[in-house]
Length: 418
Image 1 (cartoon, rainbow, N blue to C red):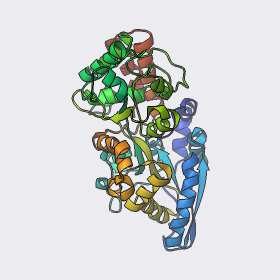
Image 2: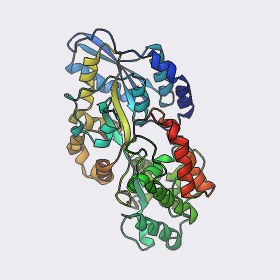
Image 3: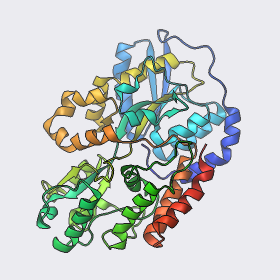
Image 4: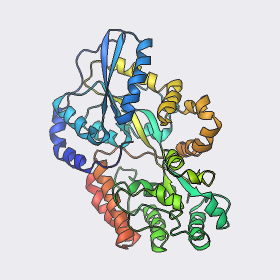
């Protein structure tokens, strides 16, 4: 999944949406056979683009007629570059696309549907596949995934008299309280209070309470009883002084995790390495755990999919490359070189994924991925999520009631769905 700051680009995209829709055609010209000699153009993001160039060379050895030209594109400019490419009719044959971007480009009619005779949902984590499905049609093949889990200081938990991770919301409250009152920490946890991306921390509360972002008719469901319950639980930590009410946009929770000021927080698998590298003194004193649940322990799924553009004349070659990148062996290899989690479920049975240290740090995430839910492919996701961010800021910093915040978020998002 792409980094969060894309609000300006999203606003520009919304303004241009009507023009872009008229610029999108019904498909490319005559299709080139996968057996013909050709150059396949691919956009991939940041460091991943650099790694993909090396992987593409291995693909070319097996498919000597296909030359793969990978262009690395920075995450902070890729959205506008894609929007401009759609408008100008100048796109690559295929690209990596962040999970929350799919809805917009499906609406722009820019993506070719996935051939479900060659790619099966059953090979992937369900939510990763469903995040690219609209009106029954799939438009992206999951490439890698991420999700959220709970990180907690085991040493401070023991000092507070607790020897296991919290499994329920009630136990999470008890641990946060015990951290502060018995282990002497400044706070008991860290719930992001405001700024871009706050929705990422709150969404597991909504899903664990049994709530949804959209109801069965595709309308926002942010004022549902489940949403109010999730907001109430989220607010409890601010109300009790157990979580910071204000943090700067560049706040690094790993530092406060190291000092013990924030002994518990929710984040993704990349934090494993960050804690190891930045807080070496914590070795053996922390662990990831499944998210505490209400009705269930349910996270959301992010990551990137591989998409083929509708106007490409090399869709068959793009399909071959996509099959290669999402194969069991290549998914495991991609983890080796990038540490990105495989979207292909069978890849988790490969030796590199079953290694003792890998299982120790990532086994929790495999479990969480199997129950995770998708972010719906919304055309205006950036605007939709920014309203959730603002609602959570009202909750944490203006002390508005969960009921009032839920009603406000509902009203603000009703005009942002397809």
